[in-house]
Image (cartoon, rainbow, N blue to C red; front, side, top):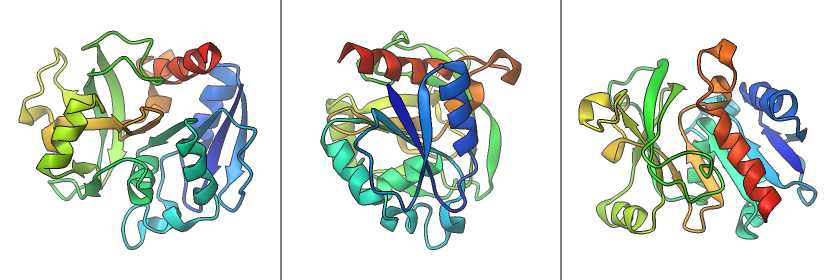
Length: 231
């Protein structure tokens, strides 16, 4: 099993993701420079957090045109596993691999803190080791994490089971006061219709070891390993 971590100019969470896969999960992993176009030998591609191309224009808007993106889109369309974390989520949106757009946080400030998210769908490659409604403590660090989609699009997400994580309280309350950035209906993570592409704003790689204060994010990566091995 082989993971690839894409590195764009301005990525800063690539080493964190690499570390979790190689040293915590004990899986093969390589960095993929944004100009690389050969992805045939990978089982899962990770788009990490950071500030690709300095977040000029819009977050992810320039990275979407990097040479790696065309083969990555083809990779996803073949049903292979792709996860975009924070800036990676923003890039997936710009590339059209998952629906919706990302706006600035409703308070117009960068937010960096631990949040709680509720697991809404466990029937995905990314969540099969969690329980339904399981509460996870995972940090966020973003300025543009306010996910938006129109009413028709939101209804489609719900009908297709594409909403995977919602921001919530420590006991699972999804009231607006527990929404850190204004994201529509507290959405923290979604998958595409085929459920092989996940975009999420919280950083599971930053909650994958006890010394980081939480192990709650590790099973996202472990779920991917389990799913690939079973398929």
